[in-house]
Image (cartoon, rainbow, N blue to C red; front, side):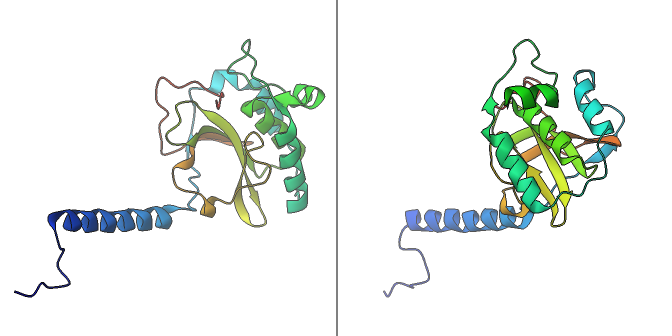
Length: 200
């Protein structure tokens, strides 16, 4: 009896081919979703509102600057070079940009807020979420709408802006974001046991 070359040689080969096919389907689905930046839906309040006084002070005084990519690249790299420093006395409240500037140090909240102040544009949002979906601790970063569309600015972990279309959907999962004119709730809900602001 001649074996049909299109049929699996053994049951193990058959299972392996099914798993391989499923992997390709999953990869295709992930690739199709990559690049879609969740901008959230307007909301009247978030669980972090009581801690975000310094953030609102910065966002409300942002001007009408239109920084170019060279300026943004430079600022993200400058913030990335600041020493990481987490203040246990103020674990939830962002450090002011003035303190971050003078000490050249801060945590993810502080670096994001410093960067927002330096950009001085209203086309920016302060974001709370997770740098990747599997992490248990929250992180803070900015999203900025520039000439090339929305970019992720994370001066804590990267020296350059990130293009959403080059990331997986499980990267930079926003929970809440804040613009000079409002608050936004995003599709993913932060787990109840996570802590705000510490990316480690």
